[in-house]
Structures are given as structure tokens and as C-alpha cells.
Amino acid sequence: MQNLIWYIIIVVVVVILWLIGVYNALIRLKNRTDEAWSDIDVQLKRRYNLIPNLVETVKGYAAHEKETLEKVVQARNAAMSAQSGGDAKKLAEAENVLSSTLKSIFALSESYPDLKANQNFLELQRELSDTENKIQASRRFYNGNVRDFNTKLEVFPTNMIAKQLKFEKKEFFEIKEAEEKKNVKVEF
Image (cartoon, rainbow, N blue to C red; front, side, top):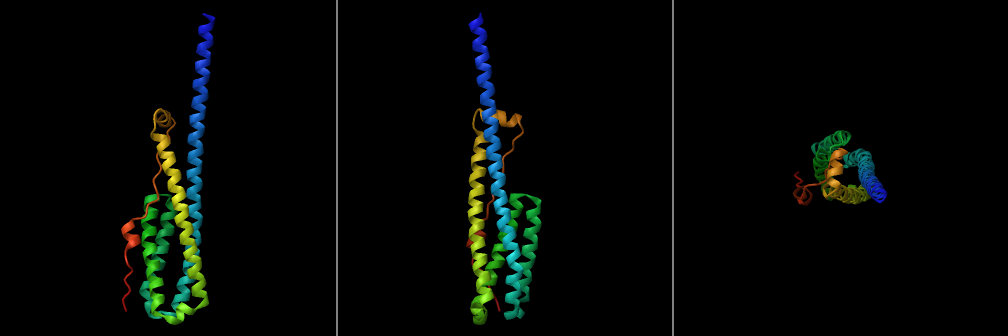
């Protein structure tokens, strides 16, 4: 009888340790995902800060391209608004629009040789290009963490515990490929 009690105690202790391990693993993955989202947030803020400088530089050379420049500013403002909402899907949509309008600014530079040679414009273009690369890297890192977190939430038996602890799946930060691959149309 006493052996049975010890077996029960051992089983209970093992189950409790296992539950603690599962909970800690879920918290670790959730925190990594939140950190990755924060990395995206930092890079997007950097991008938003660069855009007004870029627009002002282009304005000096392409004053009659007011509509294109206004679209960039509107897209930036929309993306900043979406960013404060914390919804990955809405933010991705706003970032799609911003990316395509930024492409139109760089397409404009092809039509203005003086602008292409302007040191401020070239530096801003380099900075923005670097920021775009960092955003892509941050997005990949975030999506990898979301994949790991969501997988952990879905596998048995962790899925039963995760439901009880009210862990919810995270959304991927996705950019529509059709928007990314579309050529920029510049009209004069």
C-alpha cells in the first residue's frame, strides 16, 4: 500500500513538472514573438521617420509631381495609424500600399538626373533601402517565431493545456506578393 502511495506521488510530481515545463515553453515562445513584433515596430518607425526627409528632397526637384508625393505621405500616415492598432493583417495591408508608393518615388528619380545625383537623395535612398532590408529580416524573424508558437499551441497534448490557459494563435505578418512584384507606373 505504501508503494502505491509513493507511485501516485511520483506521478503527480511528474505531471506537475511537465505542466510547468509546457507553460514555461509557451511563455518563452510568446515572449519571443512579442520581441520579434517589437523589432518590426522599431524598423517601421525608422522608415516613417525617413520618408518625410525623402519627400522634401524630391519636392525640390519634382515640384509638379505633387500627387505622387501626397500619396506617399498619405500612405505613411495610414501605415502609422495601422501600426498603433497592433493588428498584423491591417498593418501588412497598409505597408503594401506604402511600399508601392515608395517605389513610385524611386521611379521618379529616374526621370530627374539632378535628383539622382543629389547627395541627400542618395543617402536617404540608401538609408531607406537598408531599412527595407531590416524590415524584411524582422518580418522573417517574427513569422518564424509565430510559426513556432502556433505549432506549439496546436500539437497534442500542449494544445489542451494552451486552451485552458487561454493562449491564442498569433497572425503572420504577410505582404501580398502580387503587390510586391507589381511594376510601378509613372506617368507624366
